[in-house]
Length: 377
Image 1 (cartoon, rainbow, N blue to C red):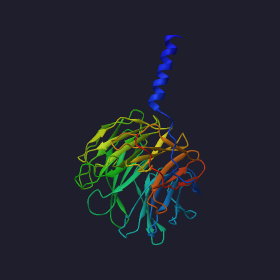
Image 2 (cartoon, rainbow, N blue to C red):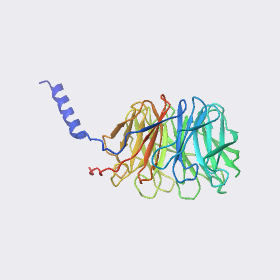
Image 3 (cartoon, rainbow, N blue to C red):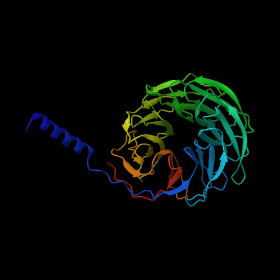
Image 4 (cartoon, rainbow, N blue to C red):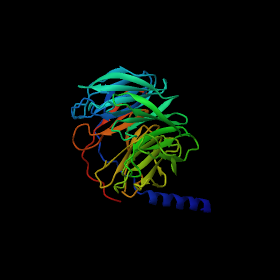
């Protein structure tokens, strides 16, 4: 037997030992229920829009310039969608109470029009178009927060190539354009949180240009302005960013995904504005949207990942210290999955998942089951 063959056998044996036996995915999801949505669905949000205590679903459709509203019935099912027109190519949205009436409203980033549409919620799940605010070329992501501490919700919008635009809320559902900040590197996704404990809203942003191997965090001053962003190396061409306390230390962490390198990256927050960047860990084919929760009944937080090229949903089991178990648990979904959101749709205390299927104009709702906890490794 040649030395090359012996070396290959030894390498294969070591690989198999390291990987262990294949892990059987626990039976934690019911078969999905499907609902029709519009053409090229781009974003999904789960919020109670009619104040009945049950999560509803909102879906933007970039292919036919519409917004779908699916009223939740509280048992994990939804009514057929009600459709309304948006601006051209709605790509992202956020829900908050923009006019102070105690009812959720919607802000929609219209990629084709370069503006943000404000849709005011009314009693009973009725909506009224308020206005559109011009923000600049190709708005791609949007988030809300009170950036100037006036108890009125504001908006942060990223433009596709190199800008972060801040819109300050007036209080009646209207907004005024405030500062614009340089954000070169093709900003892809953003989240709002207080990362340094000063009670001011900050913004964390992921970038998906080819050479981007870091995230940026804009620390808020509390008056509607932001400091120069701080770079935290990690990740590569990130398509999505999520915040969650993954190690339960009371500080918000950041997690990014890259559909180009098939990896995820965890940034552990220290509560003082700094992040310890954990090593990239493997995803499946084209990981993008993320939802964190205890999915498999263990003591630690896990991550649900929808995989665009793999037509699958992965549950990545957390160990509680910033590391994760490999291999993952994988579940099939429909073709070309895109956006995903998590909420307790049937009030059983478990977070369910809703996933958009881009090509088939469908929405799949996966209800959770009670599962036997997985033994710790």
